[in-house]
Each structure stands twice: as structure tokens, then as C-alpha cells.
Image (cartoon, rainbow, N blue to C red; front, top):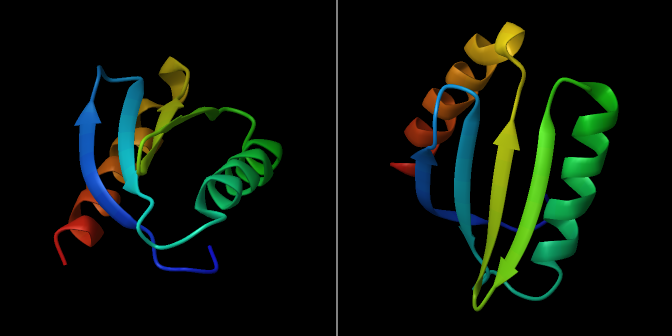
Length: 86
């Protein structure tokens, strides 16, 4: 993404679903960037499902996978959590 986006929360909603809340204080266009990235990633890795939910000053991003790719989602959650703590 072009601008820095701050992760405000991460929640595991089961072994096949991850929810991220992203701060919109980075400026306009962040929601569109999240949608664009989600579409491109879904085209590359079709086992991911993405749902973008705009809110006041934030964008929610739900990421789902099938059972075969639960380990991929777990790795993504671990890496995202580690980056969010920096």
C-alpha cells in the first residue's frame, strides 16, 4: 500500500477466519487501497476470501480460507500480529 496503514486490532474468529481493523488516519484513499490489494491477492491466491467493511475512521478486513489452507492463515495472523506490535 502506498501509505502506512496502522493495524488497530487483530482477532482470530476461528481457525479459518481472521479479522483486522485498520486505522484510516493515514489519509484518504486507504479503503480503496485495501480493496485493490484484496482483489489482487484474491486473484493470485484464490483460496483467500476477503471482505472489506468500511467504518468511521477505520476499515475492517475479514480474511477467510478453506480447511486446506488454515496453516497459511495462521502464519499470516502471526506475522501480522508481530508487525502490528512494532
